[in-house]
Amino acid sequence: MEMQDLLQRYFGTPDLANVDPAAMPAGIDRMLVDLGLERDRGRRFALWTLLYMLDAAPDLDVAFKDETDREAARNMMDMIATAAPD
Image (cartoon, rainbow, N blue to C red; front, side, top):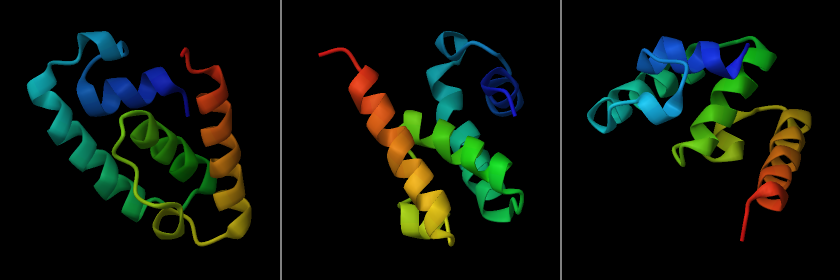
């Protein structure tokens, strides 16, 4: 799942900078519903990652039943924190 595809699906544009701020909560709500319904691990991880980047992700123990997936999410969080400018 490409990030641009997720942005297009939930916000109507592949560029996050073009998302109308008023549309953000509705897109996040739809992503949270889809996260709860999604059974494919890769798609679930992609949804959670975008939610994390939007500061709307559920806790790891809620989002992922498998410890391997939780550890992958922790690694992704560490990478984002390391790459973030000061």
